[in-house]
Image (cartoon, rainbow, N blue to C red):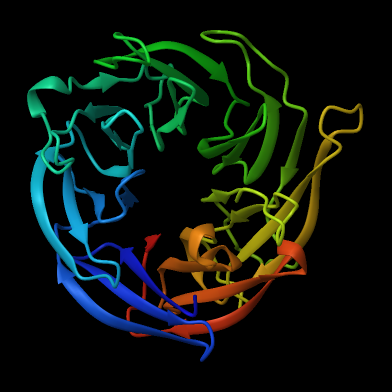
Length: 364
């Protein structure tokens, strides 16, 4: 496939569609569709590519919305809107159960909504608010919901924990979700987002700007030691730079990309680096052996300001050769990279400045 449609949300009142032509090396904005306020995170349905969900990141009460799209990115909706149950929901994800989770960053809680047979209508009465216990003299900041083998794992940036949630009906008949355990994280590290690959948890820590790897502990309250922790901040930062890690991607290996490299984004909220923020690429080396660890492969400077969202394309149409990223600040727009050297490096293919900032993407 040569041309790819990409949806993009951000802190405004529209969802944009980009058309990326990999042969011509162009990235164009083809449409802007009216949407809720601050659709800062959008998430595709896992089984129906025509459906996606969006947050409205608002205070004191955010919202969750459902939308539909055609393969070329013509967006319709919202088809339904329900309150998130709290303040500034920064993340939503559609689950394999047919439910949709949304996490409220500033109020320390979240909701998990059942949907009807169309997957577009939310059951507002069957989604109680889940409140995460705050740390002493602090506040919980749930920043993600990650589904894994019948559980939801939620990184808590304020509480330095990964909360484990399970449904009261069991994985076969999920109902209401409850906090049933936790995985402690380094104090003050601020776990933000995570991925699981094999039997390892990889966590990106916003406050410490670190990437960690550890075995998946037994549920609900098993523990495991962190095997390795690496600083992800780029070299040569200017005085006054203030780094905060944001996103982590681990695409599944393929024949073209056999090594599951780890892509992590930096955000400089202080004095800006003329090179822009960097995407750091790591490799998980020697898993299961005494010298298991994380190895920095390279840093790719993007010219972007505070990379919050980035996404790799879909394997089914060849889009996994490409990565799109954008900043939440500045005016550097969105940029598409080709994964080269088996995924161990990135080279810029196209950039579009028409929309200065974006925070989240879906490849169609």
